[in-house]
Image 1 (cartoon, rainbow, N blue to C red):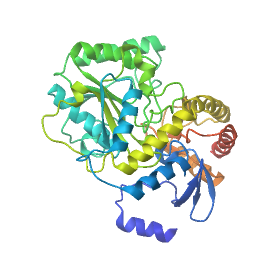
Image 2: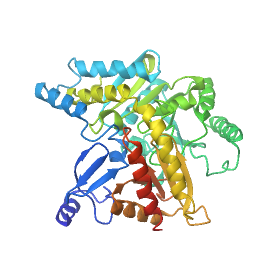
Image 3: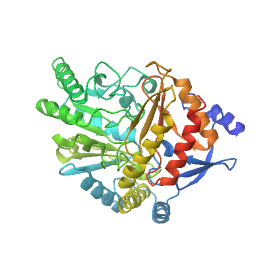
Image 4: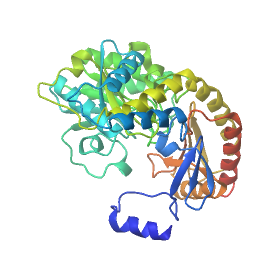
Length: 426
């Protein structure tokens, strides 16, 4: 393993982060478990950053990929592509967006990049509203709208970005308000901001902030924002890269917790739909999607193999009601995690919904971030045979728990016990 780590450092950029003091090589997986190069098994509560959404080595997906690869692997969007059309039809119908069009990409970064292109072209403006503590990707345009310093390596951008209050419920100037007053204050802030700006193109927002540590506003905030945006003609982009496909349990899309004013104008997705294959995409109403006045294609977006994987994975998810499983098992998991965190002075907050749970760690008795504690728990969990993630806007001090949506009750109980043991080492 040390040899592989040395080789990694010799050819891979320094800024490609690795988890753990002794980095882990994952060789294979099955269900909710993975194995390392030494043959040790781990319960996977992070799913390759919320990407192995359904299960490792899901037979329905691997069979679909193998069969499609045996026919043709690649053709590009210059040719008709049956799997791409079939998956687009299903996603358009599920999106909630009327007269929807779907464009496939290879990642969430590229999906958000495309959404920004559409919004700025449609509105004739390069001004974007984004949320504090947000993350939208690693490309030049998407780091320019990312409100999280740890993931934004440059202040240069083709866009003018203005940041709005509201993505984080328990920090900031409105943290002590009740939900109703919190929403009112954030809407007033948005109204005031728009009084000082040129015509903005869009507001982009994650219903639950992923890299930001699974933070979220009260339900209905983005609906209240939407009513203001509509008066100004500003588009709403819902970044569903981490919240889509039923992970929150209560809804299929995260935006539906804020759907009182209707669906978003643009929806972006990626990660889980491919269950590990490189699939991302954008859904928008036809008027917005068709606004580009120059040619555009995708060489790899919508490839026959990734579309076959997406179709098989989506069918499995719907047929087995994995959204319902996320609601039921996720409710049990967050209850067990809250119990595990009771009496741990470093735990500031346990938050989330469905199979998307965050544990924020601070220096005991303060609001100061505690990244050392987060790193220590990550290491201890690994030693116990549990893989989790981390994130957060204040020095990466939030543990992120997001198992595959097929997680069983027994696995939820086991994972919570392993996590409790890791937390007790602080």
